[in-house]
Image 1 (tube, helix red, strand yellow):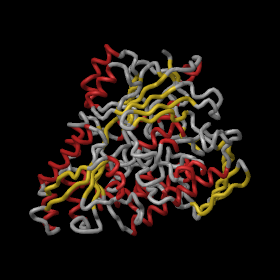
Image 2: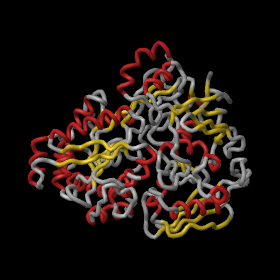
Image 3: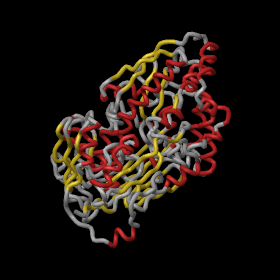
Image 4: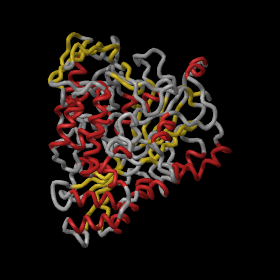
Length: 543
């Protein structure tokens, strides 16, 4: 089914199988120290979150365990999935003296991991300054736009950092809290290794330390005994297992190997869930589940700076060719949500589909109208086109890609997949380096600015479709300068209406996540995004 707005609101809370414990009850229990938690994750292309290819979730997820940032999102069973309240991480407090100035007071006594070349020295304001400077200047950082409003970052004293912006930026604190784009790093580590790509450079101030990395096999993290929050983390070791075979990881989950669902972010694809849920009742009766709309949104990118994609009618035809309801009905097992340019999972900022106006019609499958538009644009017989693609190790993505190819072929577009290895895809096609089209999921950001500014503003590395649209650029800047939430939402809705007509990207529907975790993992609450480490920081094992 295509879930409506009211359904989304209901799903914004936890839909639980089994009994959920309230935060007060959970904290009334005495946490146990020790044990090992096992996750199925992914092999990083490298370990530098700022260099080319560094926007990868395969890098960011383990870094949520090993590194800290100034601010973070609250986590735990009391946080509703799809909401992201901010709290301090390395910053114990912060102030905003005016619209363009932010001052952060750092915790005292925070220590780097006890590894060379930092050897457990204290973190200072200079480390934050160095991190931000590198984030903005290192070549190939696709996330640099997140802080392009910053004109100066300076240490006021050993434990105080001041940011000065060139203009008001309403999303600044959200960017600072983003996992893990602005993970704080040490200058000595970069100087020793030249960059952060080697596993030896994984040195942070986070709750866990990298103990071993086995390429294409797994990662072992061990508890940081000098973590700045006394007593945390409770779990001694985290094992991250790389397994790219779905049948293998499904069998492993059934046998009890993994403590969270094996798909991002701790979920099980509904196709697999339908297949195994009855068996799990017998084999793993203590599992907990929760359902909420995903913010992972795949889309078709196009070279809008050249023919035929520079013609809006061609882009609109491609969108009309896609049968989104069939994607929901088949690979998504009948449960999913249509997405405007901001995914429906961000329910505070995504415009309801029935408010899209003229552009709403391009989200409904209409092959005859698609053919008419192609003919009007000068392509009555369609055209051929390669689509850059990587599987991400996801059977679901592969299934959807095959439906996309069939839909395009039905209107005369002879598309074929140009499949690449993941690292090659991230360093090229994900940053707009492709000949015609690309298809794949986008970074599951937790705010609308990241879904819009980087992808639609001219000159940004994540502007995959090579868009140059002064109308949308003006609105993108205006919403960034608008602190009033209601007025900012109005601008964001206008942006989405405009983009729906232009179809610079063709958005696919998103699934409704089935988050699954072992009942022995106490004080855990699922949510959207990369922050596995944050969601497991206060968790403990009752086994």
